[in-house]
Image (cartoon, rainbow over all chains, first blue to last red; front, side, top):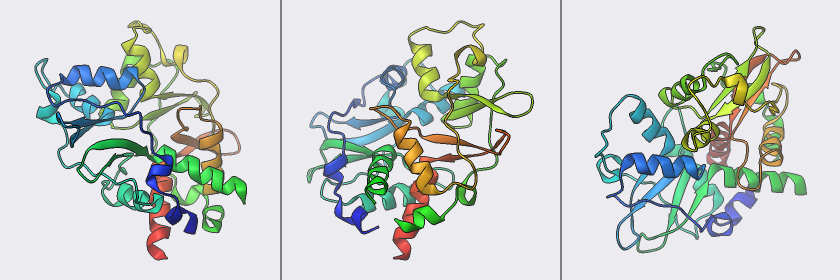
Length: 140
Length: 140
């Protein structure tokens, strides 16, 4: 498990992140998620500071129980307590955060990566971590 | 990484699996996924043998590009090449399968667990694996 403490978030994060603005329409945001086959959309302000997050699971659930109207914006319904990580933290730190800040049913599948000012610079997913583990296992 | 070879799939799999029939309507299947906040639905025949799989990502993408009609069934559009795993295989095996059988963009996030007859007895997700890793990291 020592390897997991040595590999940094910046070594495996995705830097080409699709994100939303709080003013965006929530149905439009759901379409962006589905069209791009992604499961999570960080929400940023005009300075690219992360201020919220939306997941396909959350939007889909609320759509299906008719909780949104055509006027609902991302800012109205996004999760404001976003768990983020910094590029210098390790994969082990990411694993712990995904577990600890998840709920009893589910982990947090994606963590936005932010710089010292809280600005979005990347994203790291549980899938990125599984890929690293697979590589380490193959090398042994 | 030795721990990952010792822990078996059956030790951490979920046994209470929600699944679909090939005759189910695809829109209905999408609703089941969203309502239950799950991302994958194994498809089984009348003997509970796994014959396909559907993910929220796949259904959502095809819905958004209008590829389905109201009559489309799960059997029409499910992925028939399902990557499964057995309860006696290890977490390391699951990690490798999720990576190797994924595509360049994404891993396989969930593997149905089947018995020697191919019948569905559980499911294991990347989230289940992250939770185990987090526990191991805490113990060190």
